[in-house]
Image: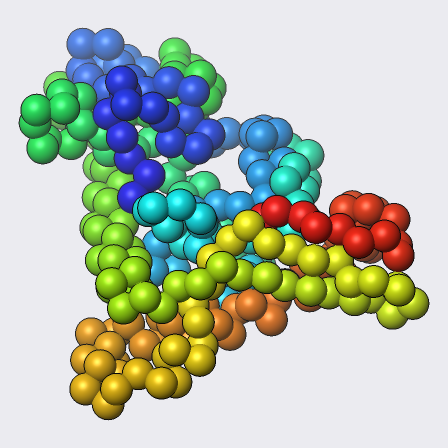
Length: 263
C-alpha cells in the first residue's frame, strides 16, 4: 500500500531504505524506537481495511484525494496537529489503538529492482532502531534470521497482504463511484460561524442506500459493506478530535473566525 522501490520515492516517515542482509547486519541488533517527533506532528496515517473495525472506535477514517485514494486515520484535523501522541510520538493513552503503519516502522518490504516482483525486508537506517548495540535482539542467529527478524518479516508480510486487500476495496469504491468530496462543519457553542474541514474524500451514503439489490448483495458477500459502514460510523469521531484540539489549545483559528482547513 505504501511500499515503493527506493528510487521511486519513499513512504511516509522513511528517510532511506536499506535491505537487511547477513554480510552487513550479521552482528547487529534491533531495539525499540524511544522517540519519533515527526509522528507526534502527523495528523493522518495510512490504514488497511483489516484495521477498520478497531480504528472506527478511535479515529475518523477518511480517504485521501487524488487518482489513487488511500484510507487514512485522522489523529488531528489540521496539519501538524496530533491530539493522541505526545511530542515524542508516544501514545498518551495506553489503551489507544496504534495503526499498523506506525507499528511497522522502521521496517517494510520493498522491491529493490523495478523489473522484479521480489520483495526484500528493508529498514530505515536513520531510525536508530538497528545497530551495533549492547542491548536489543540480534537480527541473525549464526547465518540464519533470528526469531526477532522472522517475527518482523511475518508482520511486514501480513501488512503487505492487507495492503492488497485495501487496494481492492478502494478500487471497488472507485469503480462503483461511491466516493465523494468530503466536508465536515463543526460549530462550537458560542461560535458565530462553524469550522469547516475539507480536502478529503468519503463514501456517499445516499449512493449506498440507492444501490441495486444485486450490487448490495455482492458488496455484502465480498465483505465490502461492513467496511463501508465502519468508515461511515467512524466519522462521528471527528467531533471528539475537534474537542481534544480545543482542550489542548490546538484550535485552527480563534473563534468565531471561520477555519477552512484542509485535512
